[in-house]
Length: 397
Image 1 (cartoon, rainbow, N blue to C red):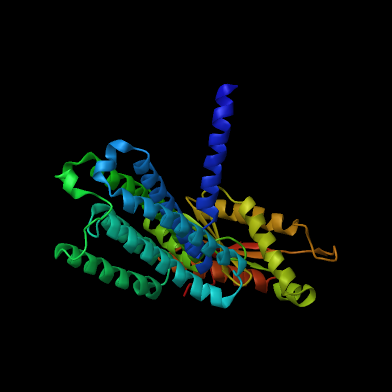
Image 2 (tube, rainbow, N blue to C red; image 1 turned 60 degrees about the horizontal axis):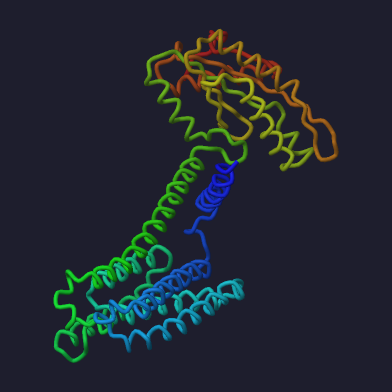
């Protein structure tokens, strides 16, 4: 019982995360949704600054290594910045349908993030490890989420500002990393407060970037898989399209085993479109594709050859087996029950032409032979099955 109480919320959180990854593609988000994400990350970063500075103020043992007066003044600035960033999130949802918001808010969001990075980067050192990690991470996330001109308009000034701060620090005009008391530290690279501070700022940035890029990479792969599937599948009937069929046919031919090809055409399909409309005709094609799929073997391949024509590729099948499969499909289509919107039954039938790799060395010649057999069926009354070897008088092209 106790284990169930622990595992149930964990599984629920896991499911929420998986649903977000699979169904909320960040790449497809609107500019305002991406701005809200950027501002949320900025709020989280600001909150971490407040925690860090609060820890300094309540820990006397590290006061010697920090500029306490500056820490106290900056913590109020961080609270104000946190409030302003939270207020900026409101337009992302309040004005989500406004064209001006789609252009202005992302620009303001990225500029605000970069301005915050410059300010905080100067306080802890313009070329410190934490500043460099934050700089590179922000640019990477920004380029993934927003248009390049928006990111460049922010990070080019930010680069100039950090470079100027570094130069002025090196020349002694301004202090380097004024939040730290380097005089008391002596050797900053080995000081536990300095090292702990850098680790405190770097780790959340690295983790956030890792999680975000992992989500984006997963969603990108899902999109690639989806696009690849779209290029292979007929969008109406959800069976293979002609291009994908050609690929499968060539692969079958290269494997050096017998295969058969069945080409079928729906009888009088034009009348169905003329009488019931093209929308109902599409529904008929969908039902026919489903019926054919249910009457094929697991290894068989079905595709839409074009219009009302379908093609069946049957691996490891001779002409006699193919004829039996075609007859089974013909009978299934003849018995198929399809009703239109007025609950009127639509009767369908199909003509089948069959050929085999035993009759040709070229896979596309096999299709032409099946087409010749199909043409003979149409000429002799339709709703029949005929094989190419039953047509001795026809010579293949």
